[in-house]
Length: 208
Image 1 (cartoon, rainbow, N blue to C red):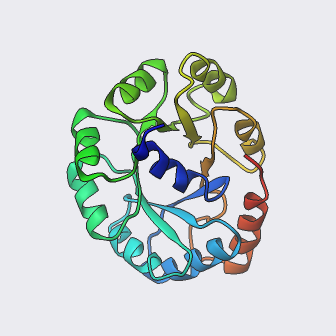
Image 2: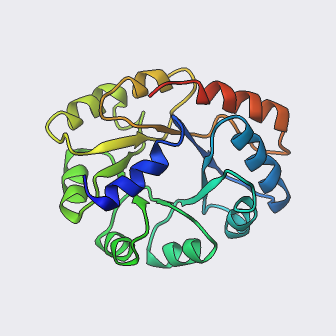
């Protein structure tokens, strides 16, 4: 495993579940982050899907114990904005040469999206050994990833997309899976911090 992969894996091993967050109000950022960290989920993926996402990253960075990253990173421009906002890791739905090269040049930990053996082979060729499997359920679920990962053993994954509390154990049982990404802990709307913390605690108890 390369030093780069080890840095990405360190984030992946913070907890068995990485919350995938779509935050539409900056005022919700700190309470949500505090609840998730208190519940045992310190790695937070803030998706760049809302106008306030970069401000959410900045706000969540103030929460003790939080390791805040940016999701839905599509290109080098997204990457630069996320890093400037303080993102400590990056997650993308796929992988382009432009994004991959930019992340490696910046030495920024990137978890690129893959959905089939060709994607994984291309990612490995570029130097990425720790990958997102997306969209996890639509791409064939645990049986698909088990089959894909068998001949590509140096790759380890964080399945995301359709992952739930109910099926997360099936993913985490795979040797190739380090953690999963999920959004079920934080539904849309005004956050119920007590419920978020309780759901985070339940997710954190899942074993990889």
